[in-house]
Image 1 (tube, rainbow, N blue to C red):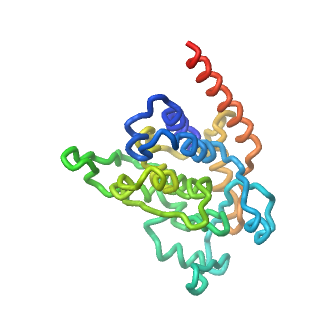
Image 2: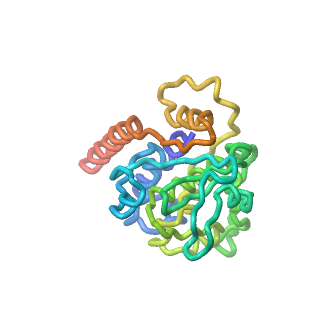
Length: 262
């Protein structure tokens, strides 16, 4: 699902000149490579290098793909917020019913809350934002985007690939518009709004019994993730996705090179 959704978005970010959607949410073409790096990482589940201090503290390899943990009961995991008391992940989920998932930046871990699995995958009807042409912004605040698995998971994955230990987290679409180019590319929700403006995922039926296309790698990994025991932490296997990403990226570079010499 993420791969299918992001393929036209990656194509758009690679385009020259940049699209109106890119200019709206990222503003500056000089950040194109950074935007593509995040989008391709999400689409292909790439592993990323981690900083040395984090590796030592967590006993991890020097690179990893996103880690997803399904929170189903109290006591599974506790984290701390700067100087605040420890917080139970499950209780934190209960306090944020509008967010099906969230990202723990220090642990580089995405938490899927219990209500993630009862949240619609995508909107059953159009949730397109309406442009206010008189004021140069949107009439809506974009809050509906947090209520679907696809966009919620993409937001948290964007945090992982942006790789900021203290990320900014602006959600309101009009506030996202006002961010500078440099801050736009490190704000996860800008990637969500950009992707939503360039892709139009339709109503999705239960695909667990029809996933047979060997190319549908993302959908298969999603279904496997959902079927795993919810009490365990799962890892997305990066090897196949990474090989495909390299091949796909190289083909695009070759295509660009051909265009440049015409």
